[in-house]
Image 1 (cartoon, rainbow, N blue to C red):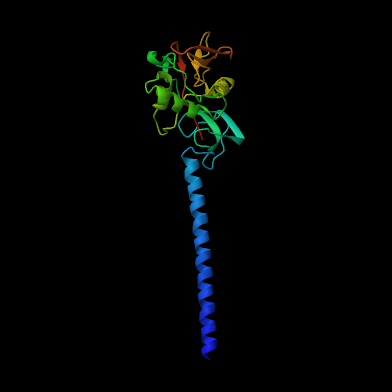
Image 2 (image 1 turned 180 degrees about the vertical axis):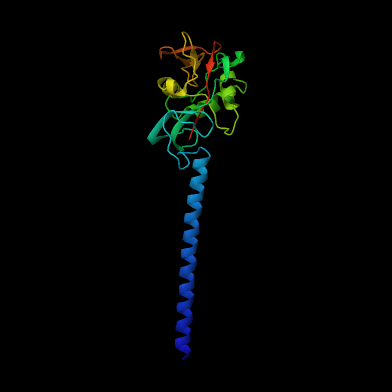
Length: 214
C-alpha cells in the first residue's frame, strides 16, 4: 500500500511539473508575440499588421513612397522594415547640410543604400549637433519621432514616386539633400525636376524632406 501511494505521489508530481513547463512555454510564446506586435506598431519593422502600398497615408501622417515585400535592414539597429514614409511637407525652403564650422569635416560610416539613412542622420548629428538638414528631419515631430534625412538611394525612391507623394518641389533646379556624402566637403543631392544626382558643397542650401522607415 505504501509503495502504491508513493508511486501515485511521484506520478502526480511529474504531472504538475509537466503542466508548469507547458504553462511557462505558453507564456514565453505570448510574450514573444506581444513584443513583435509592439515592435511593428512602433515602426520597428513591418506595417503593424497592415499592408500599405505606395501612395497610402502612413502611420506618421505622411505618404508611403517605397514598399518592399522582402524588406530591407536598417543599419542602425538591424531591424527589418518594409516601408519608407515621407513627411507631409518639406522641413524648410532651403537648408545647409552642415554648420559652417564642419564644412570640411569627413563623417565616417556614411552610406548610400536603402536602410542607411537613419544611421547616416545619427552619425551626422553626433559630429555636428546643429547640422541644419539632419536636425530639421530629426525634429520633424508629430506622432512619430523616428524621422531622418534619407540616404542617396532612399532619396532616389522618393524622386521615383514623387507623383504619389504629391507636394514635392519639381520645378527647375529643385534640389533635395540626402544624408549621404563622399569624402570631406561634399554631400549627395538630387534634382527633382529631372532626377539627376550629384554631390555639391555641404554649405550650399537645398530643400529637405524627412522620411521614416517601418
